[in-house]
Structure formats: C-alpha cells, structure tokens
Amino acid sequence: MNQHLKNEGLSVDLAGLKLANPTMLASGILGLSAESLSSIVDGGAGAVVTKSVGLKPRRGYPNPTVVQVDCGLVNAVGLPNPGISEFVKEIQEAKKTFDVPIVVSVYGFSAEEYASVAERAVEAGADAVELNVSCPHVKETGLEIGQNPKVLAEVVGKVKNAVKKPVFVKLSPNVTDISEVAAVSVKAGADAVTAVNTVKAMVIDTETATPILSNRTGGLSGPAVKPVAVRCVYEIYETVKVPIIGCGGVTDWRDAVELLLAGASAVQIGTAVALKGPRVFKEVTRGVSAYLKRKGFKSVSEIVGLSHRK
Ligand SMILES: Cc1cc2nc3c(=O)[nH]c(=O)nc-3n(C[C@H](O)[C@H](O)[C@H](O)COP(=O)(O)O)c2cc1C
Image (tube, rainbow, N blue to C red):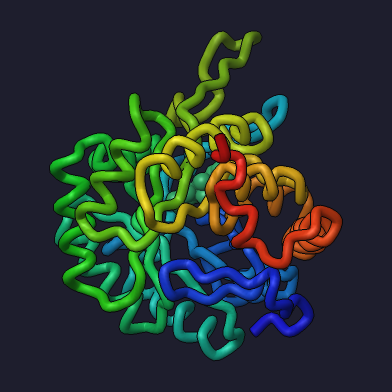
C-alpha cells in the first residue's frame, strides 16, 4: 500500500476496494501501460483506472483529437486501445509492479462483449471493473448504452454474473436525469457509480469555418466541468445508497473536498494529470488532509455528503 500516504483518516472503502487515500486516476489519461500507471502510483494515487479497453484493438480517430479551450479540453480520441488480449499483459505487469488497486475500464458493443472483457480483465488481476457506458463520441457503445435503461441494465447484469470483483458504472452527464440512470445501474447490481464522464461539446475554427476535431464533436473535461460533476454527485447521493466516485474538473484539494461534500466517497482526476503531472495526487491528498484537520474531522468518511444536511 502507498506507504507515504498511509493514514487511517484518509483511507476509503469503495464497495470492498481499499484505498489509502481518496484520489484515483480517471480513465483515459496515462492508463494504457503498466509503466504509465506506475508513475501515477508514484504520484500518490489511491487507485488507478485504466484506459477503456474493448474486445478488439481499436485505432481511434485521426488527429486532431484533443483541443484546449478556456478551462478545459475537448477530446474525441475514439477509444484507441490494444484490445483485451494484448492488454492483459499490462494488467499482469501492473499487479507485479504495485499494490495500489487497479480498476480496469471496459467498453463493448453488446452486453456479452462487456462481460467477456470484464471477465478477462479480472482473470488477469483487475481489482474492480468500471463500465464505460458514457463515452460521448463512439457510436453503438458508451453513452448510447448509458442512455438506454433496458440495455444498461442488461450490460450491468451480465457483467455482475461474469465477475466476482466490484463493478463500477461510469455515468454520463449528457442525460435528462442522471440519478435515474444511477438507480437503474444499482438495481442491476452496480457496486458503485462514477460521475461523470465528459460533457458533449464542440469547437469550430473561425478562420476555416470548420469543426476542429476530426470527429466534429467531442467531450469537455477539466475545470469547466466541475460544477456539473458536483451537481450530478449531489443528485445521485439523494437517490442511491452505493458509494459514488466523483469525477470532473478536480485540479486541487478544494475541488476534491467539494465533491466529497456533495456525496462522493472518492474522486478521480484526469485532465489535471495531463496539465500538472502525477504530483497532483499527493497535492490533493495533502490538501484534503489539512482541511480535515483544520475542521476537526477524523476521517474522509465524516465529510462524505455533508452538504446534504438540512
Ligand atoms: C483525452 C481523454 C481521454 C479519455 N478517455 C476516457 C476513456 O477511455 N474512458 C472513460 O471512461 N473516460 C475517458 N475520459 C473521461 C475522463 O475519465 C473523465 O471522466 C473526464 O475527463 C472528466 O474528468 P477530468 O475533468 O478530471 O478530466 C477521457 C478524458 C480525456 C480528457
């Protein structure tokens, strides 16, 4: 376990997954190799989530795939990944290299595909799986599944039957009522939910009058998304009883505390890792720890959902 950050008050239990601190790497940033995941562990993350992996290799979209905008990034990378058969080697290597929990993010084009990828990830050593039912820019997977309650329930149910490790469901903010989608996931067996994936977005080059991303539309991440994530976590907390993992725009300890107060039990960090490097995990954890001490709290769990007090 992450000795340098070992502190009882900071530890978190996510549906049986034990984290030494409440920070996690979000899917899609430095998550494709054991080596890059290891650099995130050295940066102080309490757990790491891999890039989303599917049954077959995928090249993703041609460039440009990422554009920097005010307060964030807009990306449509198109889920590039080597496919689970290749990726199991990285999971096995990661398990030999560090003992921080590794969550494998999984996507598929059918419930069977999700279940089969999840099963192989767990066989290779994944401590939990996170179902990407929220990617806004690839057809027939991701958000197209997360927006359809019947298909979503089937995906979660099949994965739960296939694996004995915790199953997290990553939700999209691009829906009318995110708490309803969370409730469907939990009813189907989700052990925790992650909120949120990117917000559907677009950037147009005014000189050429054309969309910049090769996919035309993409997903917004970074500081601009944080208030959306806080609202989503807050609404989900009022509806379901499973742990919530907050994600979206966390850049410093204050952002993390805000998500915890809204109801998150842990927070994921993505864009800030790309912008600040892996040290962001230690920085955020130290800040959360100082906040708890200053306010007289003994553990992270004491502030989870505190803003719901009437
Ligand atoms: C370049 C990039 C790639 C991403 N790839 C994935 C992915 O493969 N699977 C997934 O579930 N989320 C993916 N995400 C979404 C992030 O995990 C996260 O939900 C989102 O960026 C909001 O968090 P942040 O503001 O901390 O980045 C990606 C985000 C970015 C910026």
